[in-house]
Picture 1 (cartoon, rainbow, N blue to C red):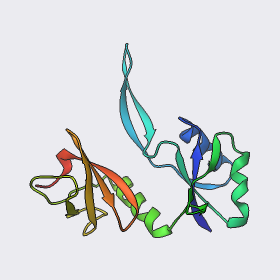
Picture 2 (cartoon, helix red, strand yellow; picture 1 turned 60 degrees about the horizontal axis):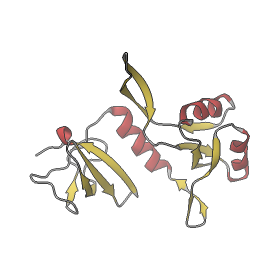
Picture 3 (tube, one colour; picture 1 turned 90 degrees about the horizontal axis):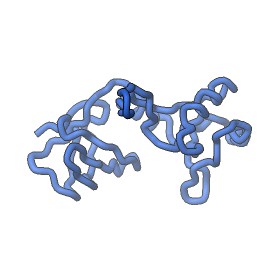
Length: 158
């Protein structure tokens, strides 16, 4: 069985994820808790890390089962085939997200295009390239894994 990436309707990731689980389809939708501000209150809500995407584990012949579920739009395709995520990559992502490890590249003055190496956490000794820097966050590209992740400036080791 392979892990595939499905695209969902906007803001339907969690509903679709719950329905997948109810139908005995192995799925993974990484989330985090965010504080949202309304005019009269603040509330903690569960938010998906990847807007519009859910990972599902299916046999190739069973891929069409997900289209019976409301909220599923299509599979994500890469080079003409349904995108597959290797077990090791998904396990690495799960470890990183579930353990709450902070990203810690070692750099004194961060510049776009600079290569950094993680010094701790699930991504220890992995190389990344800085793609974008904002006031509080850095967007890092992990070329070996084909992923982009965001690190908070407060979590960076200087």
